[in-house]
Image (cartoon, rainbow, N blue to C red; front, side):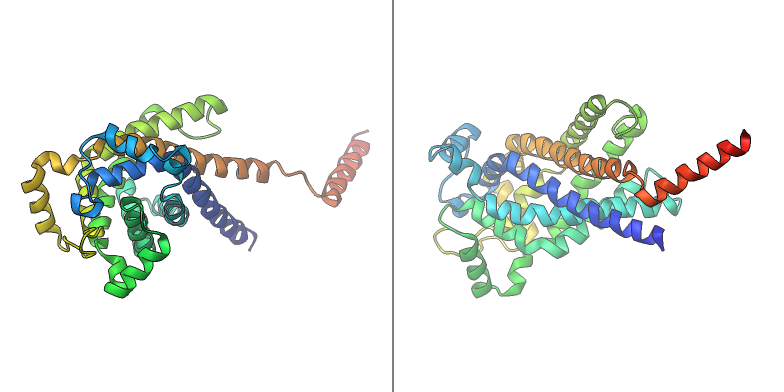
Length: 318
């Protein structure tokens, strides 16, 4: 019974740790995420062509630093906090379960990533859609987007592009976790308690950034396709792209192969910084909890019993 209670407590703590990690990573990288979305969205959705990272960043910061960091921040936190509260604990839970089942360690990251990505997207796809729409169009509020989607498409509209998103996220997250777990095995780094705190912190952040850089470089085109599917034409208020293959053909005809990598630079910067913050915050939260739990002093009655037993043993020896 005690073991079951402790396991439940650990799972609950991991949920809070995931939510904490989501808030930390979002606050750090929100401007970069907004720039990335605007660069990768179509001209019809934004009302202008975002061809340059510098120009797009300048437009975002023109209204002040507070505007740049707060634009879409509410929608972003609304999506990232529950997203990480589902995603990271699900990955951790599946990893522990598959390890106990003896599943091959090379296959575990892919299986865990697929389960975590699927659970997160099924639960939170509406939030992801609202976040994208708010980031693309400065005029819209969260409430306006929600009302507009319900009026035009109903509940089904909130799940536009979900299958594509699951597939794309699985590729990116599968690559990330595979590389990350491999680097941890090869270097024997990245776990708190193995070596000094600061050394472990630096190693964990470094391994995360390397793994995420590799994953984003491979899986980025799906971001461009997803943003086209989620956004609407600014003039007509309707979706110009509703299917994956026609959307891919449009992107290719409009910008060639490079069109699938529009916004890659801020995405790499955002994703690498975000993932490093996310993983480090999550692991630090769990490490702090474990340290507090295991070092918790004995209750006074228990301590008194142990002291009395020690005194009796000492008297017997004498």
